[in-house]
Length: 286
Image 1 (cartoon, rainbow, N blue to C red):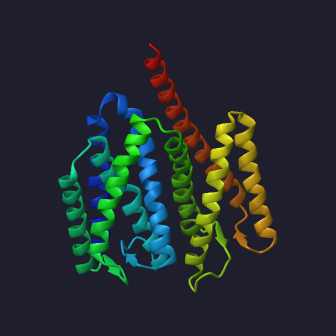
Image 2: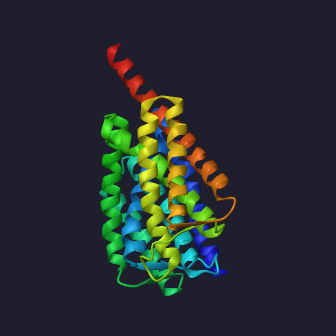
């Protein structure tokens, strides 16, 4: 019970800070809050894929699920989808100085140390000092990303932000659909734990799927988005036939809905960013 309360309390505080950030951000930066949030979450998801899933650096213990690995991934989502990206938003949108890097890093360093002491979080080869250093690097990247996306309207950062706006919701929804609802399981035998193997493969699948959706959204044709969804559904069918994907009877319905929702989110982010680029160009021409 204490584990759950601690993780939920941390998430609740971070959500309040996220709402505060949106309210206090400059009006012209309001359209960028959600795109930046997805970008920072995406960066953290990639980090967790390498450090947590592939290399088993640590283990989250929120005690939400009976299965330890499901529980571990839920804790990862709490941290990398909500807590850390919110801190990155605050640092980047308010253009905070290095002393604030140290403050936020120290607070999260202290939270991690406390969680380890109370057995809410377990280290294998990881050290909280890696977290301290890594967070400062992340905050620096956050400020650069915000500057390039919001101030410079950099095309590369715009495309990457759109990509992460597909990757983050698709990864999150697939986690719940695959591991909580048990609708599918990738069979690659990468690790002894079948759920860990499935998540490792599913992340690569999601990354490729997000790339396809990004390309489709940039075509600016409605049929391209639907074609990209059905193309990935075809990939699902192929993986089932070669016995690399185990699914339930209702999998295809849920999979289509998840992909469609993801495309809608990504399209909204893309339209928002393009509108802001056009607005800047119009102001420059005046």
